[in-house]
Length: 99
Image (cartoon, rainbow, N blue to C red):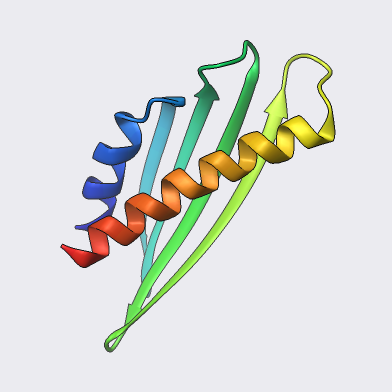
């Protein structure tokens, strides 16, 4: 199960604290959602939704991040946090699919 593996890796991340995660089986794959707080700043977080489908021997992954902040921060800072979150989740998916 890819979700369990990805969840374990993301939960141990040094940059983000997972405050909420969900998993849903859908017709041809699975949908996972992680809502994470950025540990190096107060009030910045990212929600990452992942759709994972396997058709034959091919794995399709769609990842949609949404960054948010309780304070006014620059778009550049939100893009940086989004990039870090994306690299963490995609890295976890890669590791889990290689196992």
